[in-house]
Image (tube, rainbow, N blue to C red; front, top):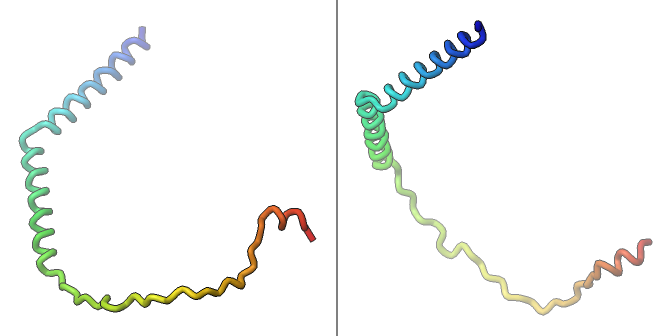
Length: 87
């Protein structure tokens, strides 16, 4: 009997908590405050973006192209041959 009453009290407390949480979340005051804070953030971003300095472009002629040489003196390694001759 005591167990059922305890479960009923737990269920009642949880349902009251959910009711008030949902009531606050969908209230007009919460919607107004969240909308105001989003507008304030947008205004702050616009003000900050106007204060940003514009940097000059200094990347002209930065890439140097190197012509490919015909130097084929590199030794070619074969993976399986390296495993076979394990010296």
